[in-house]
Length: 329
Image (cartoon, rainbow, N blue to C red; front, side, top):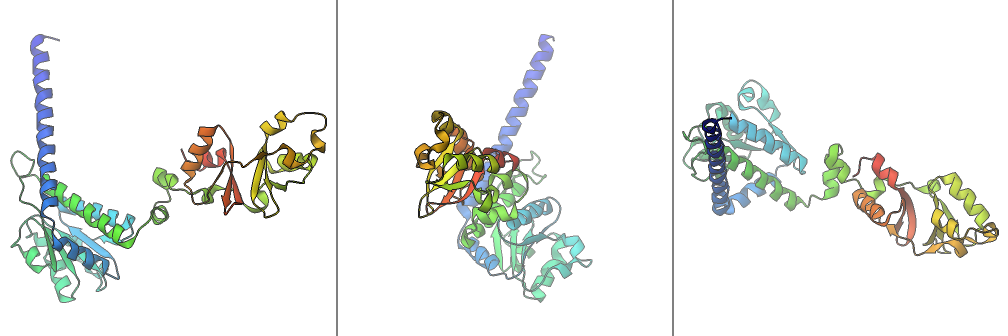
């Protein structure tokens, strides 16, 4: 490669990095301006959305429409039933998707998007709460909305100031802020999150021990007075490579593993009682613990089985393979 070509490539690299950093600075500045500008109007918007007994209908045209789709998806996944309605399709029958029990969020940077007109009129006619998200305080959307959330007056990252860049980034951030504020207002928990995200890596990360443990007759349990001859039968038949020892109050008092058998290996092993061989006070875990926590616990202690206890009593048993089969990692 010639020195001239290398120099040109170096200039292009530096130019590209400078352009990217300028875009990110402008968009970060827009989000910071939005954060500083938030006031009680945002709280009113949250109260309006929380008061809707139906769904939150999110709408927008063009790039704003893409943001609206994402905001609807985020709301729905965090406990607020939501749906995206295309404003142009609304004018051709999809207004039937909007009911008087719903609330509407409309995105339009200019506040003058013509395709929104019919949907806005419909909201006013049937007194459906409308939140307008726009960059123009005196616009048609801002005037028609029950609550107008105004975007800060910040330049687009596009060097010509034309392509929606900073404005759509700020819209997205505001949508996330609404979603999370509603999540916290409703007390939406990780358990609720798992119900709505059963699939994929996220769903697997939120699995509880109770979802994958073995219960009832599957648990290898004996009393402390049980002979080791019987313990060996139970250990073999249950297939966990361990047996839990319970006391008179059915609390987990100890555990017998393959390691315990090796340590007590002798001709009189089968004549001993379970309590004479067991390891007392075994490690255990709660049924409401995350399965990933249980897997980390077992890996960290180089064990393959873990009893699950509630109020000191075994309610299940977990094998490391149960976590791996469930996709927990």
